[in-house]
Structures are given as structure tokens and as C-alpha cells.
Image (cartoon, rainbow, N blue to C red; front, side, top):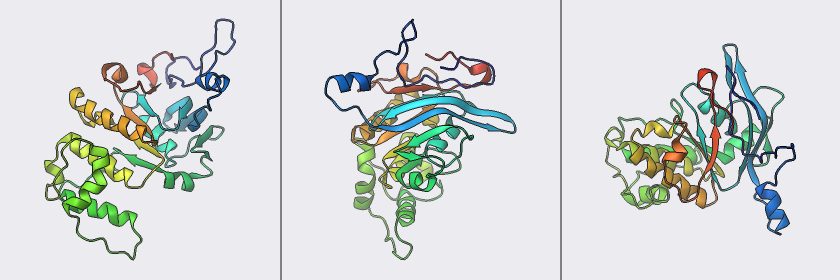
Length: 271
């Protein structure tokens, strides 16, 4: 594991630690195999993943093993490379050469197009922002039109159509009305709507950036609960947040995987 140092990213690896004499301990996959239970297939495998620009390091080196159908939380401060790491996993950014990265069994960056079709993104500033001047119905119609063949006309979205699209993400939370302006949405509803639009792609992997766009931690708990529910259906979820202690402060149905990512003066020792 990398150690914390200035200008170097560190992660809490998802691989098994070693004993004091250097012998690797049994991983969950090894235990499952010895018990006759098939080990979970990894959705993401990364070794030495890193990205630099002319201005310096963006993130890395990062080693990851994220099983399918799990929720993984990337914790790191602003400027720590969280968004870039998630976009790399989604096939939208290219890491430095010499890295090993497989997402959903596809090798990146060579299979970027295939990965982009199977991975959806939400919460990224400048990418999936909602136009605050339009209604929920208009935003939904635009999303459905983007997903439909170019020659197919998408009709006006009614409340039933909206419910069919977003209810799996909103769960028991009251759904927004089609006539409501995006500007007037509660920040939890705005985030869940962006996630619902991403899930309309029917992805195998969902990456969600900057969950702390929902500023209040009590209200952010709602978003985490819905992301847990999505992962429980079999869709792997990787989501990021600025707080380094987010996982310890939230309540979980099952504790998520943790990835701690920090850079420069914010660097923390790897677990």
C-alpha cells in the first residue's frame, strides 16, 4: 500500500492485508471458495491507477477491487481527484499509461465505448446538471428523448410516466410533480432526480459524484439509503463525498466499501 506523502494520493485498499510476517491473510473470496461458495465477481479491478497533468498529480496510485452489486464510497477532500477518478471508472477520462483497469470485465481505456454504454453517471458538475428554468416534466422528456432513437418522437411526460421512471430511485419518498420547476425542487429531490435519469440508462455500474451537494447530513442520509437500495438490486454503485468520516457518521443497512482518497496536505495514512 502507498504511504501518505506530499503530492501523493492514498486509498484505503479493498484488498486483503498481510500478516506481520508478510503472509497475505485470507480474502473474503478465498473464504468463500473454501466454503464452496463462489466469490463475488469484481465490477472494478484497478492496480496502480493514477493520473497526472502538467500541473501535477490528479489522483493515485490507487488499487481497487469492488465486487458487483455493492456500494463503494469514495471519501476525499475537494481537489483530491474524486471526480476524475469516478470519470475514469466510467470510461470518460483516460488514466496514465502503465495502469491496469478493468470495469465490468472490459479493459480500459481500450474498451471505453463499451464501458460508457454500461456505466451511468450522476451528480457531476457541468455534465448532468439540471436546467433550473424548466419543469420536471420537461427535463424528463429531454432525458427520454436522449435515450430514444433519433427518429422516435417522445410525447409530453405525464405524472404516470414520471412515476414509472423515478419511483424505483425515490422509493417511499413523495415524487415531484411534472409541473414543478427544477429551481423549486428540494436538494434531495434534485439529486435523486439526477440519479433516476442516470438509472434510465439501465446501467450495470452507477457512479455518483459529490453526494454532499446535499449539504445537511441528516438529509444526505436519505440519498445514501436510496443508493444502498439501488446496489441491493444488483447495480454496482460508486459514490463520492468530501468528508473523510462520512461512512462512520451515516447509518447503513450493510457497511459499504470505503475508498479514502487524499492529496498533498490532506493526505492520510492508508488503512
